[in-house]
View 1 (tube, one colour):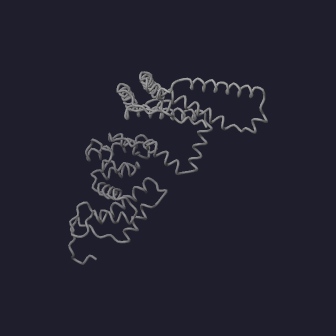
View 2 (cartoon, one colour):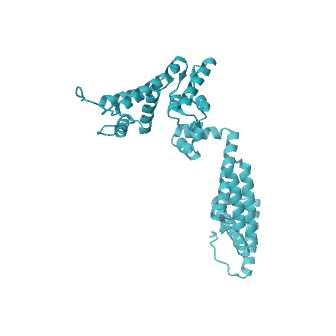
View 3 (cartoon, one colour):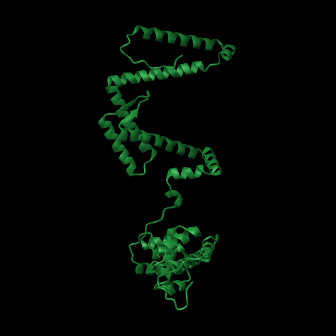
Length: 351
């Protein structure tokens, strides 16, 4: 409690009370406010925060920063937001053009005031010039019969960095995370894509682009690739350099799907030439592809319901099976006549 005749440093501030917390919560928690009401509420909060925790703190108790952090925590505010409220309120009260702002008759938002005082957008103008810019823009709005100066327009006038749209500013992964966390939105997106041929084609094109970029990136960064036969091989240095060149070009610009196709085909051609130029790799690749084909054939045969096949078989089916049996017998006889040549044993998948 302040005693009568007790001296208080001008910038000392004071300890906050539960009533201060309730005051901040009541003004920051209100919804459906007009632009002007929101501005007035934040300025009122900022003035209260300055009273409690001014920037220049001269007392020996809990520092202004400490008081502000604790009050912000209890009121459910970010510390940076509390600082912004305080600094903008003080800046406005000390503004050399305060009366001209009030006389303009044009509404301006909290964002406009914050950009003027705090300069969060990095305007090259100094504080005095920013105040004059605000007055000028308010006057321009009045002449254009506009009732409100928007933050976007004012930032452009200040030469500040534009604020991107919140959706386009998010990474693709973040957007996917947000959609996935909402089953209703996720279902709606899937339904929209499924019912729109253009969207389906666009999604397919982007998916193919991502896969092909991944292929080029692996060659460029790891120096390896997976062949059609399933081998993981090291690529020659010239192929890796070519992949790096394509990857750099794709990163430097917003690339269309066809650019990724061109990079993929160029790198794949170099990889194919590398395989063909190395007898051992070429032999392993041919062998791997053979085993893959035999595995698929065996899987298809084992998947036939024999009892069902017997009941529905006709002459064409019998001929097909007989021809396949003859082809497999000829292949087995041919392979058994050839020397092993030191080939490694690979599980074919045929039982």
